[in-house]
Amino acid sequence: MKLNFFNIEDKKIKNNLKKNIIINKELYLEINNLKIQIDNITFDKWKIIRSISTDYEIIGNNRIHNIYRLKRFNIISRAYYKLWEILRKYEKTFKLWGKPQINIACLAEAPGGFVQALNHYRHNYNDKITAISLYENDKNIKWALKDNKYQIIYGDPKKKHDGNLYNPEIIEYFIKAHKNKLDLVTADGGILLTDYKENYKSQYHLHLFLCELYISLKLLKNNGIFILKVYELCSQNMIDLMILMNKLYRRVNIFKPKTSREMNNEKYIICRELNPNQEKLINEIHKIIIYLWRNPKKIIKNFFTEKERNKNQNLIKLIENIEKRNLMKQKQKLEIALNYKNKTKDELKVLLKEKQPMHIYMANKWYEENQHY
Image (cartoon, rainbow, N blue to C red; front, side, top):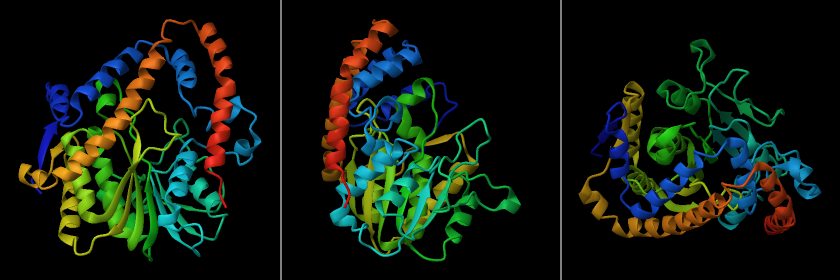
């Protein structure tokens, strides 16, 4: 792989990030301009607007409805419903429901929504689940799931490891903590970004994605499953990541759950079945991870040559078409939401109340579509 980098201290970093968008660029930048308008709306007001404009908003917010079927499990985070949708959609391929004991690792997992979904989906079967997330103090995010159904690993206690998945030492410790190969690895990580960085999430997250990908490659069985949360798929470095993942896995799908808000660009990459004889490529990823850990002011611009990219034009075109559909939905929802920006909070609350019957209908519809065995 041939690496090029951005320096995030470069005064031109914003322009460089924008230039790195290579597919659906016009649509992508239109959406960024819509997001800038949201910055001028107070957060309290935006939360109401978002609730009005999101079809499945009521799912994952148990305080504002009385749907027993959705409330009875005390779901701890919206992530639960996203993974549930993925598991249901791909059950015929995954065949996870009927398997005996399986081994699972959940990366960047706090507060535990994926673990809870897996426990419920598998009917609390005696699976072995390990989880890792950045260790936080009491003022920040905590593990909300209090049971003995999984083991939390932060790294080596003797070295005061903190669960930082960027740290190569912690990665190796986590890998070595597993004596057996795994059936499933999930990665739901995200970094809090501000100002213009929010519009270039994937580019700033690429280091994390590579760390999560590397762990999956080292831990999974040959027929294992890797579920990775990403954001936009329009930048050159993210296209390169998709090419890389298609080299490493035989089957790669892009899926946006209904419970993932249409106004954001979050989606999941579903990878299955490791391609054999890829140790050289896996070692290259490891070298990149070490380099980025030692050079935290760098962002990968690309890691394939133009020649390699040209060999994958069919894949790039497929990604472009899928991403275009997602971007069109995102743009439509943002435009609808921004129509409410001049309303007062009281007016918005009235509108939200008027929307509640539709939201309840959509929640019940989602439940019917995603019932389990």
